Length: 499
Image 1 (cartoon, one colour):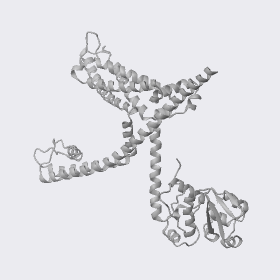
Image 2 (tube, helix red, strand yellow):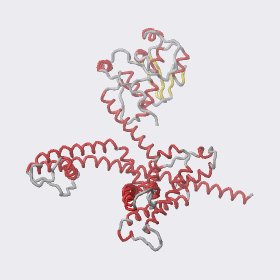
Image 3 (tube, one colour):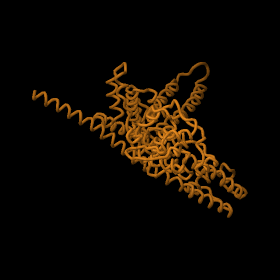
Image 4 (tube, one colour):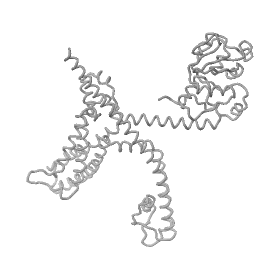
């Protein structure tokens, strides 16, 4: 989308700004590289320029005629018009403009007259004003063309302009990221230039990444969401005691719902492998957050099976009694059991696979990424409040008999619950000063929690609506492609029949 910092000068000294306001002197600041055509010869002084040329410079910008004195333009020799006025080389003068009318001695420039009106006022007054209705990008491009520096604007105009420029840059950045999330990365040339099975991998990639490209792709997306829900329900029901009954007659030592979960993992593994095989860019595939979630969803089961292989050996090894081997095995199994419990806990992240098919979840994650500074500041304030109020309450409550505030770390839980305005009531101060500190802690939590919620909600609503709009546009684009292909095939078949 371009950079909007191309012609912003950081030099902002008071004496220079005062000189601009008083319309004195010529430009003496450092000059950046310009896009002007270099002139081979120029007058060494402004006096020579004014004596060897007419008194008025006639220019036409976008169909509107302007007249400026050579003396006013020559004050700024680094600008395009200043070079035009001070140059004696005819070829250089013609190279600085788009056309020249010799009959009326008028130089023509095919540029925006609305922006040049501000440049014209700058030559007349020495001050560059900025209008709010102008696009910052277009305004900076025009300034770069005319060679006028943004530092000639007064401080009030510059502050407003830089705010609008930064806001526009942020909006364009957000739009690019949202569009990249809504539209799958498609580059058919990468697939066609692949050495092995390029067209087949492209069709497989459309099947896995673009649900609305075909009916089969839509069925695949629905099946993926269905298996995610089934696996999460099976994971939850596996913790119910009635569901943990084992059929020892069949020789299977696992509950029946674990077979359902294994089936879901098999589908997730197949889905992940198909995405891996069809991707045109392995580096982008490895750095994708959604693909990382897919990998986390299937790893726990395979790690669990791998660890169980090391604990299935029941035969005693080496010397020693059976009792010693049993004790050693129990210790080994207990350590492995802790690891297995962690592996089973990781299976809950399987629910995050729904983010691939949920616009709301992706918009929420995008909001957190864009507002990481506000979220980090909120967490910092919460941590500061917890440390401060826990120390206060401990100071006034630790001498009370049968108190729960035995140390500052014990008071952290009370402070966290109070700042979040949950208030379990398992710990509460008993002294009047402690209750005063508790009231201040709760009030601090109410004020603190209320500030970022509105910001996060407004940004989430904005990002969600934009993401839905981009997805709707991408959907219409895909459906349009399918309809166009069908219409073309129908026309071809009709022409063949008529022939």
